[in-house]
Amino acid sequence: MTLNIILSAALLVVIQALPVKADGDLKDPPQFTGMPSHSVIEAEDKDFDSYKFCDGKKLFTVEGKVWRKHYNLKDGAQQPSATQVTRNYANALKKLGGTVVADSQITSCGDKQYCSERVFTGKLLKDGGELLIELEPCNDGFDYWLTVVQKEAMKNDVSASALLDALKQDGHIALYINFDTGKSTIKPESTAVIDQIIAMMNSDKTIKIGIEGHTDNAGNSKSNKTLSDARAKAVMAAIVKGGIAASRLTAVGFGQEKPIADNGTNEGKQKNRRVELVKK
Image (tube, rainbow, N blue to C red; front, side):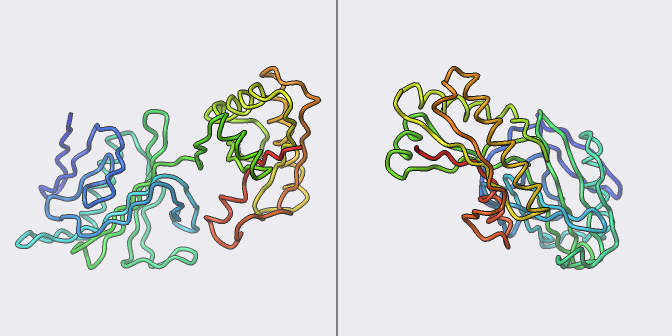
């Protein structure tokens, strides 16, 4: 089903009630299509990446599926102003129940430069997920960039057999278990990972593992170590709750002491925020 919302100056943004698909081409991103006067000329889509949004004063990073599209004015089409382009997407977002994070007259935010003096950032909660959007009109509306990020944490594609094979072959494996921010509470979406660890240990009654918590270098090193230790112990408790003897497990946190990637990049930070299983 497609809902058409008619906005000012006879401009139109089409809101799609469609499931999110990873097209990776010149198609429109989920939930929003381009202005009728414009077409996609370039796409920079990523299955999982990080993207910096501006809240009007500073940047904040969101991780997940990224759709980034560059729209250009069609031949013979009337050029809308940057304000008209921005208002169309802002109104469309509000019609979906989204909220405006920032609508700013800026040329830069943090270390990020923009092609014009106006940047619009919005947020949409939909079907239990969260979408962030950024609209950056360029050349007074002749072209613009539209970025949509479906927020999600790094996923684990693991099975009990794969875990066991990795532990026997390499002696350790890094997992990305999601916790509440600043806490050791395991999020529901990571239950499947815990279940696979339990299944793996049930499949081989002789194996013992150490659970190691790790963080990136953001924040205080002492608090990072405390938090990582609490998270490692929370994973151990969840495994014991699943029927595995505590005598087969140990748990310890190392904080930011053992990075496996460059903490100077967002991608590196993502990899460093992990829980490792180590064969004992």
